[in-house]
Image 1 (cartoon, rainbow, N blue to C red):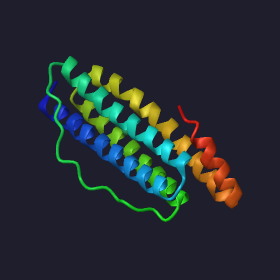
Image 2: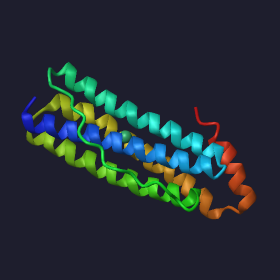
Image 3: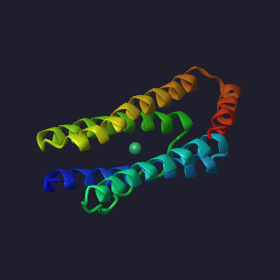
Image 4: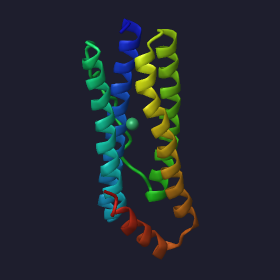
Length: 159
Ligand code: MG
């Protein structure tokens, strides 16, 4: 694998860990505000992001490249309410989708077909991520305080 592509994949590993911390921070904030279900959902999301970073690291190892974790920047710590947190999550996932578009362009320019193929799974998964979070934002926008608690307990069921 070319140096340029290795560097780009390693930057994505660090970005996934930033995402993981973002969702863990949201989970803490929501838990503190008594929304155990939303907090649980965010904790699962945190675990997903750690899994993405690990999948990329294992891919690099399989390709005889070296996975690296760089400095992970500080994440926000406070959201006024669950809707604000999920709106931020949606914005963030749209940003992540753009990162994957850029990454797959690098793999294409470096003529690395295996890495392009590896990255398509993430590109597809981003569509699901954006849709599922936007679905939650929509529900939160439409609901009243009782509905809020219902959605909280629903999201608490996330496996
Ligand atoms: Mg991710």
